[in-house]
Image 1 (tube, rainbow, N blue to C red):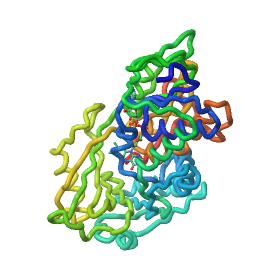
Image 2 (tube, rainbow, N blue to C red; image 1 turned 135 degrees about the horizontal axis):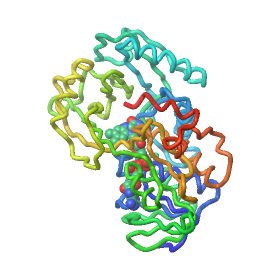
Image 3 (cartoon, protein in one colour; image 1 turned 120 degrees about the vertical axis):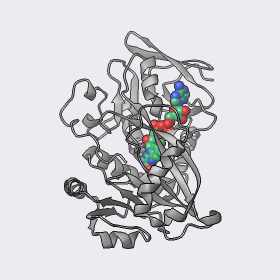
Image 4 (cartoon, rainbow, N blue to C red; image 1 turned 60 degrees about the vertical axis):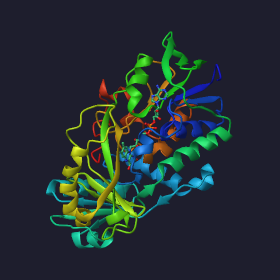
Length: 390
Ligand SMILES: Cc1cc2nc3c(=O)[nH]c(=O)nc-3n(C[C@H](O)[C@H](O)[C@H](O)COP(=O)(O)OP(=O)(O)OC[C@H]3O[C@@H](n4cnc5c(N)ncnc54)[C@H](O)[C@@H]3O)c2cc1C
């Protein structure tokens, strides 16, 4: 393994791969990406639902989406590897007057930034998603350019091109410590030796807090378990009476969501009782609670079988917004953490922005809402975190 590098990236999920790719594109190729698992993208990245949307409540997140979706639409041309991306839209169902009010403000914000979001009534929503029951739905919003992309394809696309440009990827190597001398990062300790470096990128997803603390810094990120279930038709046949497109439907009040996945259906729902944990064991006793809600929106699920399920970790920040930029108090340590359940879709833009910051370029992005120090000493612009955490 290399004993020194200009930059060490800790973590080979979508964030680490994106930062490495964007650094390499800027000519910084003396980079070592360190991943403790045998394969890249097996952390949160490998367990996510693939959802990509413009529909956020926070202006900075909408801007991350605009840039990221732009790159996903041209991924093969720009990054050099094809990626699956179905832009069949995101449909948000609203059943509470307060949600309609909130969405009214946020649709105006999204449209002001150039995003084409439509208001639909319950009947139009049902037509877009055959099989959907819209009882109690007061209104819905839809953006056609939202969709479902392949997290593995995006992560591997970034990683392969970064490697082709000269970046070193070390798998099966765990970062065990970060040495700081005179307030500045000087080396990364790993299970296979020391790498001298002056720049470390913490891209460790739900483990961000642990990595930051190795350097004596803070990354306020909590791991929160989220489940995904896959439904199949009787005898594993194609599931009928559900949308045949890849439209993502989100019942905003309950956070129940679903989209077509092959012959079956992928669905999930947040559990408000989850507390921070690194345990990704599937809690099967949560399934009946999800089904109770699910069948009210998608009656076909009553006859479906559950073919499999998995759990992964959201990397929650205190306000639902990510933390991107220099860490407070330790020179040379950079954070790209706390994406709070929507990091996959923001990895293209977030990686570009952090690579610009590291290389001293103007990222052309107001990073105030994402500043690492905002929780210790709130700054203006940081007050409104993200409200659409599903
Ligand atoms: C169930 C679920 C559904 C989701 N759905 C969506 C969605 O629809 N759309 C969306 O945009 N996002 C979604 N997300 C969120 C998204 O998956 C994450 O925001 C994103 O994957 C974070 O990427 P990351 O690279 O920061 O983290 P990770 O993918 O977790 O990568 C971090 C890597 O760091 C490595 N690592 C940690 N510690 C060390 C160490 N000491 N040494 C070396 N390596 C280390 C880990 O092994 C891991 O590979 C979902 C998440 C879950 C759990």
